[in-house]
Length: 297
Image (cartoon, rainbow, N blue to C red):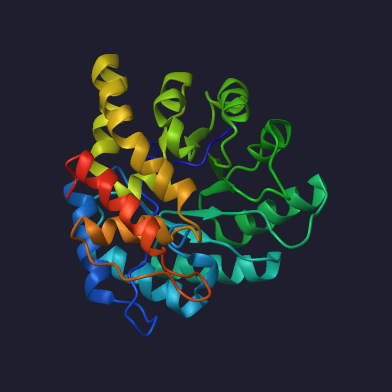
């Protein structure tokens, strides 16, 4: 099987999207955040995914964000465009804009309101691949419409499908995906509190909210596992775990907790767009305590 060619492994943060108080894109803050991630040694950047609130951004706003990121990246790492749309037609339209910008790949969720058959899912990704010609990472995050390991085996027969981002906390499914397609396609983990386990199982890297929160720590974790330094990897895992659990799973209105923690660490990114509310006072206090205990503030 011929695979889509893309240097796609390691730590690829799905960046938050900084917004101003009026909920418009904070371009200056966005450029700072891109530069921060590049300085942390990440292996790529994804713009417009769940952590980036891509589902609440219009196509023209995504185009602006992708264009800004491309200007800052200057070809140093792959740029992956997140697409969260609810029809083949809309996903293709967004994908063509991403191709026009010059991104390196697409990260695309299944549709999330309706539940197509496996044949419909195949048609969705095959059409997107045919129309855009770009490598595609399937973003397996929709609880009502999951991509099973068996369906993934069929989807990777599409030349442009480079792999999958396995989210939703299902480490068993990730292990099965690595076993079934890991030699021919990329399997990236978005199981935020189990990145260490994901790497040991054989995931090719992480494309997870944790990487947007603590990119340097995630790079160090990935490198430690690659070098066989399991003691160092466990220390990093234990350092990150309380913050990951609070920001990803504890604070309501994801990615509100991620953005709040990033703000507290001195990287101004604003708050989430409405109707996602900011963390409550008790939630903010828990974040402060965890960040202080980890010497992150």
